[in-house]
Image (cartoon, rainbow, N blue to C red):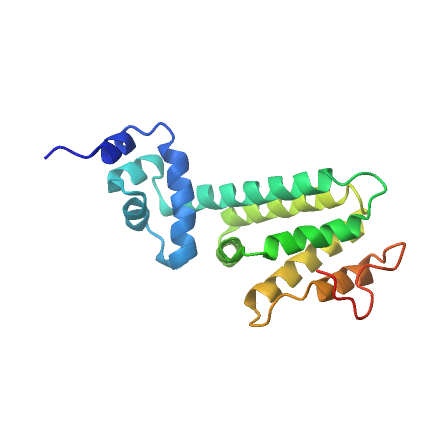
Length: 199
């Protein structure tokens, strides 16, 4: 039986390893780390099982590659947002914008992030990834804040995003603005003013 053109194309994919990494994240988002196997990834990617084990000899190696891609992608995006803030601009307000952008229809990213956190709590190799991600986020924040504020703001962002992700209530942008304003009061006093309903 002659294989179809799509299967023939996939058989010679030069970027198969990277595609497997991305498909692994899809599998983790659907099944969690506990339900992710070489076989599940092969099935989702529509490739032979041997293709997955050829590129990733162990499940740990596969998960590390997938979570590294997740962390690098997120860190690059946040770094770009912080680098785009002009000197003298309202950095706290822009941080709030970044948080709201992360929350807007981004349930998959949140699920993947917390799958990584849960796995890293048990696997020191994965904590290298989470530590690198935190370090980059804090360096990006230090463009506009002192080191202590950057570290605290990073933790605040994580907590607010976690709560918003797990809550059954809709995200309240005004509440997020007020939380950031308590940590870094804006010079004009407008960020998160009591009763603010600005999106």
